[in-house]
Length: 441
Image (tube, rainbow, N blue to C red; front, side):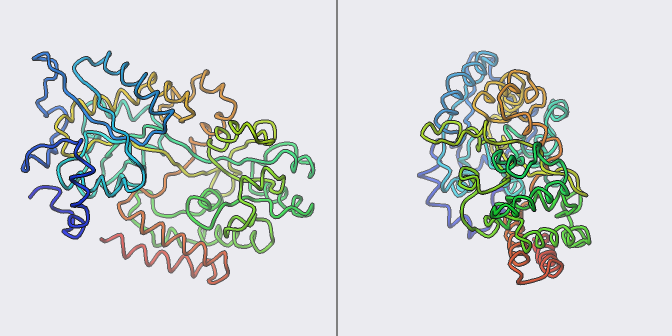
């Protein structure tokens, strides 16, 4: 039985219409050629032996500016250094993309490679849709020079089903005007210092001092983790006793108490002003955000707010769990039905090399290659040093196929606790029980 037949018939029926219209550019081999799970070094491809090039297709969701660099710098350089391989670039719209990918793998029409959202990788790995690249030549050497947390987003069932092609995380960003008003000259380095500063800001009439952007995993986990909370055990197989451990309960209780005391900005429950407006208006002492906060606001010519001059950057303040943040970004995956897995892996390894990573970093994309990320030229970008440093202790959102369901359950638990609908222990006990039930799926 082919791997893609393990996808439920309901999913196949739902995506049949997508297969013809959305995936015609993929590897349209005759039915019966799917399920190529051979390691790359057994593919039998000999791209240069007869003088013909092997074409590999790469689906991506890069922006206009990023696509220009991909087409005009990355593609020519790769093909020059690998003359037996031609790289076909296909830009995909993000809306509806997951359905198109499912259609592609179900119809044996997926590309060779794709730049995939990190939270999708374990789900597609469980389907059997992706190659386990940990079995491929040179994987360990490649892995050794990549940031650990982004690498972990590719982990599933003892293997790795992709490599992190770019990454991001969030840091603490403080409004300099508010900090001057409360007499704090440096970014707090500990949770205790953050709370002291937040109380000073609130005493000056500010609507909260700790800028948690929502009662959900992406927004709240840096604080939850830094306070000592955990979501699962180390291999992501157990939630009971971790999500609802005494340390996790205490972490969530602390966040709930901060909110009761008025120390958190209204954004935690969707209130106004929004995080960026709160910074622009000098309302909020602190928010946390990714590098796009700077790259976007620095290019708003009509705005009077100058982010580099009007903010102070710092790592997430450390508590019992250390200084923690959450990992974002995209992974580079090779589909199981690729007709050219060896060549696809050649490109993946190359794309994670120092020079290509430096090229893409000019666009503000944080390299996953540690050498490229710490390159002096890249570090000259005014706001990146803290992000690169934070990546050393940032954590991935749980890399399991059921993560989407898990996240929904945790988000609900966090919100119930913050709203006072359940106490922290009851909310986390309920969430742990519900998540354990879906882990067996």
